[in-house]
Image (cartoon, rainbow, N blue to C red; front, side):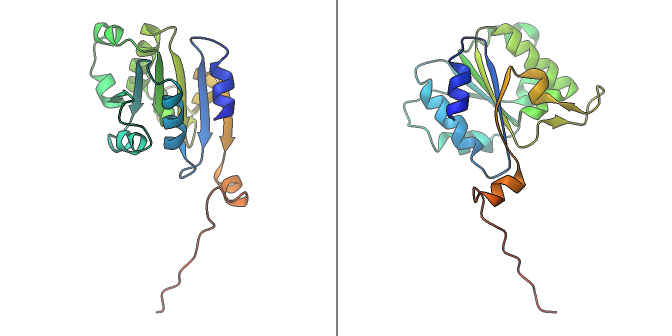
Length: 170
């Protein structure tokens, strides 16, 4: 979180990514950033609506947050995207920005918000299902990667609990 804050303090229009293994607190990270910018117009883009609820559970009820899915973005015209004005935009599962259609619409949203600060989170920054081939979206679309926490490191440093294997008798 401190690395993201440091990067965002460098000015408007900054795009900062955090790449963390599943279960290591990306929703809490997003919620903390949202609280830091309370009072600003903020948007969360995610692939599924349950992620909105996951983030909102960590927010006070008086913090305003607009939420849309990548699918919703893909249904918007360029004019509609230009009308969406925000101070800060969060892209959860930002590797989806590498998809042909979703990526195009996400880019149009960013172009309509050139001074917005952008925070992206994902467990994997590589996108493989695109006409453009395998790409590291974190390195390609963001100014800085504030942190990387892969699964083996999360297990070794006890960010995640070690798995417990259960054998069923035959």
